[in-house]
Length: 100
Image (cartoon, rainbow, N blue to C red; front, side):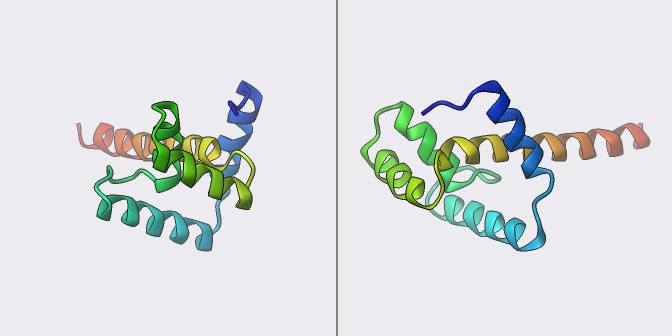
């Protein structure tokens, strides 16, 4: 199920408020994704959601299982990955501007 623009914005706002334990779990998720051949800074959940769009059976299974823990988990993970990447981009841009 696709998220609406409002749901995407809400999920991105929630990502900004992640606590320590949640951030550690995201880091472990990203580590697992890299071990399995995925990109760094990407969660297995977001990778699975994109795999569903390509019709990948493993992605479908992962999203089916993750949806039992949280409705629309894969789509929400994509929003979270994007928001975390944008935060890092802002931090790095600020630092690079200081040094320019």
